[in-house]
Image (spheres, rainbow, N blue to C red):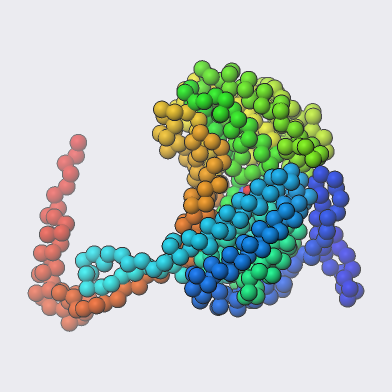
Length: 504
Ligand code: TXE
C-alpha cells in the first residue's frame, strides 16, 4: 500500500507499507524511488559495469560464489521473510531459496562455457579467421513480481551478472522487503560496489526504470503491464525480455499412470496457491480414464490443508485484488454449467481461497481462457488426445505445459505450442537450470536460465580477420575482367544452372 509520510527533512515522501497477507500486519516500509533516484542508481551501475564487465569469468565466478554463500548462509531468514511477505508456507519459502541458489550456482559455473569466444567456419572466405564472442550489454534493469519474489527475479539477475552486466532491480511493491534483503546480501558479499542494486517503488518506479538509460530490461509480470513496459522501453529502443502470464495446460492420455498424473496435476495447480506463471491452469483428460482421474484428484485435493496456520500446504493469496478475479472465474464457470467437486467460491474467506476442483468445463468459460492465478483445477473431458492438443493450443498464451502418457507422450509434447513442456511431471522444466525458461505469444519472449539465458544478456560480437590474400580479388575496384569470368564460373559450379524441382 502506498502512503505519504513526512521525511526527516520535513519534506513529504511516499513510502510503501509491506503487509503480511496472512495477518494484515505491517512488516516494514520502503521508499518509492522516483526518476532521479533511478537515474542515479543506473549511473552507479554503469560505473560498476566498467570493472565488472572487464573481469575474467573466473574472477566474476569467485564474486558470485561469495554472493551465493552469503545467501545460503541466510537462507532461513530469507525463507521466513518470503513466508511473511508473500504468504506461502515457510517450507515453500525455503524451497524457493534453494531454487534461486541453484540458478546462481549454475549461471556462475556455466557462463564461461556458454559465452567464450568460438571460432566459426568462414566458408568460401577461407582466407579469414572468424570468431563470435558474447559481450555484456552493460546495465540490466530487472522488474520483478511477488509470487516468487526471490526465485523469479534471480532467473534474470544471476544470468545477467554472470554474463558481465550490472543490475538494477525493482522488486514488486507487494514484496519489497525480500528485494531489499537480497540487495543487502549482495552488498555485503560482492567486493565491487553497485554491481547489484535494489530500488523500491510501485508501477511508476518500474516505468522510470523502463525509460532509464539501461541496456536491457527483464520484466516479469502480467501481459497487460508487459505491453506498457515495452512501449516505455521503446522510447530508447531498449531491448526487453518479457516473462508474462500463462494458461498452462496438462494433457492426460489413456495410457498415463493415473495416480501419478493426478498427483502432478494437484501439485502443479495448487502449489503456491496457484500463483505461478507456470501453474497447471487447465487439464484435458481423455474420456476412457476421465472419471478415474477425477476421483483420484478429488481424493488428493481433500488432503491439501489451506489457511494461515503453520500446518497449511497452501497459504494466502498475496494480492488481495486477485481474490476477486478467482471468484469471478469460479462464478462464471458455475453459471455456464461447471460442477464444483471440492472447494468453490462460497468458501473463500478473506485472502484465503480453498483448493477447488471443477469438472464439466467448456472452452468459452473464463476459467479455461484467462489466467486465474489461484488454487483451482478445472478438468475437461475430451474424446481424443488430438482434441486435447487442439484445445490446449487454442490460446494466445504459450508458457509451460505438461503431458502424461506413454506411447504418444513425446509426440504430444512436440505438438503443444508453448515454450516448455514436462512429460510425466508438472513444472519440472523450471527446476532444470540448463533448460531455457520462457514463452511465446501473450506469455512473452526471451529466455532466462541455461546457456540461452546467459546469451540473452549479451550481444554477439562478430570478428573476422584476414590472414592472407584471397585467390579471387573481388572486393576491390582494381578487380579484373578475368575475375568476373571466374566468378560467373564459380556460381555455376557452386549453385547449378537454374534447374528447378519439377512441379508435382
Ligand atoms: O502485475 P504487474 P501484478 C499476473 C497475474 C496477476 C497479474 C497482475 O495474473 O493477476 O499478473 O499482477 C511493475 N511500468 N502475474 O499487478 O502489474 C510492478 O511494480 C513498469 C504473472 O502484480 O504486471 C511490479 O514490480 N513496471 C506473473 C511488476 O511490474 C510496472 C507474476 C509486476 O506488476 C508498471 C505476477 C509500469 N507501467 C503476476 N506497472 C508471472 N509472469 O509470473 C507495474 N509495474
